[in-house]
Amino acid sequence: MSDRRVLIVDDDLSLNAILGLHLQDAGYHIAGARTCREALYLLQDRTFSAALLDYRLPDGTGLEVLRAARESAPRMGIIMISGVHDAAVRRAALEGGALDLLRKPISLMELDAALERLEEKFSLANGPMAGCPSWSAG
Image (tube, rainbow, N blue to C red; front, side, top):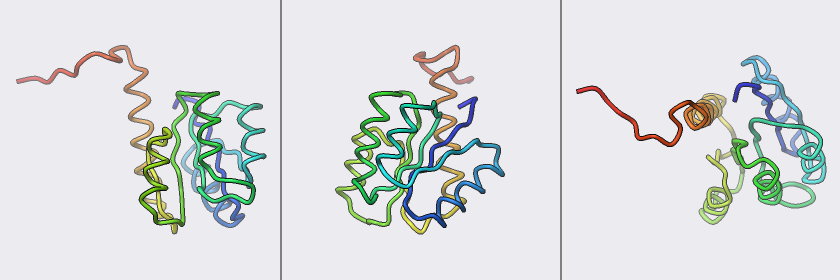
């Protein structure tokens, strides 16, 4: 994730602002959307290295945005966020291609850890030894 551009999709303006400020302080460039429609527009118009997608949005679910993101940018790292604590939602998000699902209220430490895992996964996947088995000394 060398360009470190993150799309935040959540209809909660306060949460959008908190996440946005936190990520900007960490060196990310952010864009925000409050609806599926806004998110889909931004995904067509811009390139992102990662997205934080809320499950419940006023005009649909984050799963719709997840599917569109997977089609248009299959290498984008996606983290779902949800106040819905339901195993079916978690399963659908992970099967749809999200790398993680964070429950609301979101801990910024959990978010940082999830983004770190996402960056590690994509930097390893894009490295010169991508696809090769790992070797350890000894």
